[in-house]
Image (cartoon, rainbow, N blue to C red; front, side, top):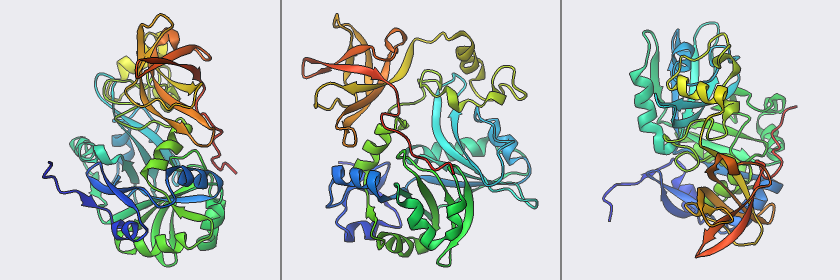
Length: 377
């Protein structure tokens, strides 16, 4: 039995009061589901709006002249030209081209101050903070925002709900970020999320988190949603979970994340390379020489195929492994993602999942499995 003391987010008491089933996750006690149940929580988010506690994630400010240049040296992404008020998906890479974590970077710079707001995954936040601290350039300081909560309001009704509290959010489009006041509470808000739906992620002072969440949950469209539905929602939307679908042994190219390598950082770009693992990553783009690739899989039966399941070809030879798998409530079929040998990563290829000794047919499919509905104006 572990002696590790699990941490609690500022919303722990609220979860318990709503009947949240609490489980250990990334060192925290987190709600995996509420009385509504995982499937209904999933479908409610797709239909109306769900509120998620993601306060276990790491929130950091990088302040001072050179903050963008310093961050750009750690990621294969254009940070220097990121407009103020915009957010971008990024990857920390290592010298071998593997992925240390995926993260979101927002530029909140003004004429007076260079300022980046960074959100990293819960399981990686200590190492990510250490990684950034080890590479701080002169004049740049790092502040860990451990006195803030983070919540996500996701679903087609999210925009209408937010507009009631903060009318200016109606002008925001996907990946816009702003500092706003909601009922007198100072928040950072971005129009983004992890479900494939329209929505917002809201950073709130810890002391105000419960009050703000109660106001949102009082809206008729909004239900509290746990980790179980968060996982099935992101999987249907083809979004990676760090430590499962991407890790230090996979490069962004093997992980089908070539879109996350900014053109300006690729060979021929004005600021090509200059990030850890650039030689390997950019080499894989140029030569297309890599052995495995992340793919989406649609099941032909109703049996879900779980993480760790081996994938085989028609002859029964192992060709890969499932990294995430679940039943997709929206599409009514099993969905999974995983890695296969490159020759099998062609759309509509039939492969088989070995489940309890049986070969279940699956088809290599496009991701996302459902249409993403980010609000682009």
